[in-house]
Amino acid sequence: MAKTAPTNKNILVIAGDPSGDLHAANLIKALKAKDPDISITSMGGVRMQEVSTHFIYNLVSVGAVGFAEPFKNFFLWFKLIKIVRRYLEEKRPACVIAVDFYGFNHQVLGLAAHRKIPAFYYISPQVWASRPGRAAKLAKLTKEIFVIFPFEADLYKKVKGNATFVGHPLLDLMPEPAAKDFPPAGGEWRIGILPGSRKTEISRHLPLFIKAFYRIKEEHPKARAYLFAVPEFPDDRLVPELESVEKYWSKDIEIVREKDYQERSRLDFAFTCSGTATLENALLGVPMAVAYKMHKFTYEVAKRIIKTPYISLVNILLKKPAVKELIQEKATVDGLAREAFSYINNPPRMQAARKELIGLRTMLGERGAAERAAQKIISHLS
Image 1 (cartoon, rainbow, N blue to C red):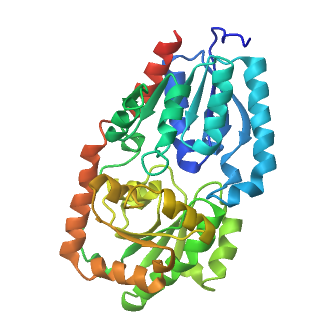
Image 2 (cartoon, rainbow, N blue to C red):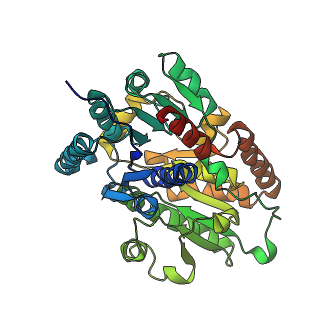
């Protein structure tokens, strides 16, 4: 029979994508601030590695996405699960904290439950968007789930889960939106390019976004583009992608890596891959066109399981097509450029869109999500 976990201050935290890595790192900092004696062992990305006591593996760098691609990483994932199993058996942590990333983390939760190690979920996977049956599984495997959208708590309560809405962690990271004039002085439009955080996303979206930007530049010669990149995708991997699209990219496109969102907040419009970036843009008041292209097999599977009419968090929260979504064959240079011009050439629409997007802040609770989750986790363990 498995032993119960002993009382200690060692916690295992696991995240698997860049946004999860960011929010997990802030949760780790909140836990340590409340109890400096806590020891954190993590598997995630570079942000978590910076703040953890021990770091096992950069899971974020694997970058698997979709239904077909993860099979390429099967043996690596199998190896990592074995490492986690061994860690749970030998170190017996006080608890496990899973952050988003259902595919890997639900297996980790099963390992913890089998060994009677309490587990928490911070930032629930979007089970409401597809496969709602997963909610019941997570409810059984966790002591408490800390959700970041208000409607998620009710979803888990329906399946007898212990879920608490703690607010959205982005509220602690976002600067207040600055007032902007349209058109900008001298016609110097600032266009954001956010192609995604995984190699497959970048390869599929970056050429489209850059070509759409150059359509804007044909009419507005002083426009500049800002390509937002994640630490997991350094310049030496981005530059070949850029050069394949536009030989003289460097004079018009600036690669940006930032932690404070200051540069992003100065954008006038953005071409954005579906994902957390859409919500980040909205909270900063940046109008956008949202695109997503994926492997054909992945798309055919996704069509059959997605339960929401939209793919962007903005439209899901507002329950209407507030931002244009261009999916698969509809994600074209013409479609992206047309949507951008519908804002750039219509300043009143630009201002109205900014106001509506910024209004999403009131739907996401109060600042302090990581602190509230950290306090509840510590209270469970004391």
